[in-house]
Image 1 (spheres, helix red, strand yellow):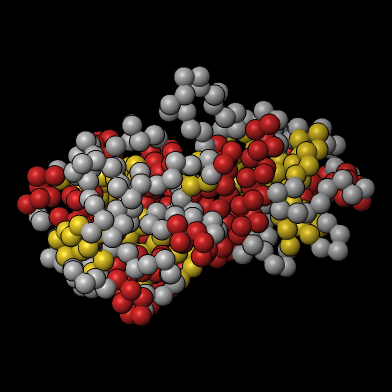
Image 2: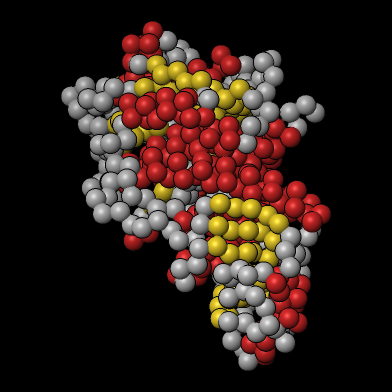
Length: 498
């Protein structure tokens, strides 16, 4: 998809389709660009509204063919919701709906004139919203299909605006394209089955990003991890024939002495639960247990394509969790890289076992902040459903940054506590701590477990169990929280010299 921005004479544009907005009110109201076209067509659009053929609900769309008095072949009237109470999610929904209609009508290029009422300081973000929404509709997973679907017909989109807004809009387009590339990459590797996307496959993909995006990539094998005393991480991979890998990717866009942001993503390429085996129903979806790691790849892709003046390190501990004679058993005690002993009461709580050693490894970078991302607990789905990711942190400022980034990116999170009251649930009679804290507050005690290994830096944890993929007939990875992480990194880069 090629995106551009320019100012044009709407009435004279020989466009395949002009997309303009309709706002909600007592009666549907044409946007300024739509009013301009309405005048040129002899009030044809107003006539359509008066007959009630078009409403302004976000996502509603009405195609007008062969409009009078203008050069364009079609006009698409697009519902944008309330003019007085603009909503980023409404704009995304509208842009996605437009892309679907344009695709259905086999239109290859279109001009979107729906930013005419956007405030100057919001142009970048809203242009990015449009780009991301359109790219989302264009995503196709085809890697393991023998019969490929044809490529999307819609291939060119131009955002139309006044000349004074073009610079901000072009920046938004650049950001939207980079983030969309990161999202698409994360979705694709997450959608791959566990027999293809293994720890070694993830390591190979990291090496490819070294070539394509200039990331410095280091991959540690089990022998090297053993030398680092990563007993917790290695205990998980003992039940699998597939060896674990610790994947480190470094993006160096900032000054050499600038402390990096470290992103740590859970890379469990398949999780059967180990000896504490999961139920058979929907176990195929446990290929998505590496979506946290995938989001780290996606965020680094976005950062590198945007040339952010920032240093970012991505760490992905990767393993499988399968039942085997050598697998962890309930009651086993392992020693982490930090030297803390862990009693494994449930082998299906393995994500925290691989993450804790990666969090200890992150200390060597003397990070400005560490954010870990994991499909960690089903309890988070019970708490927040599939709308928001769970956020936990030991730093108020970092938590506020991530919450704001999620809101701005349409990839929201909600903060939950990490009080000592919950940490006490992890008490063990036989080790420094247990890997579970009982049935109550499962997502919170999981975060508190991780917090025990993040004492020496500013840390946040995103539990994406409810947001990383969709189930049922729409089964597919979502690419979240790549938009949140990318927005967070963009914000940090803008204040890098502050």
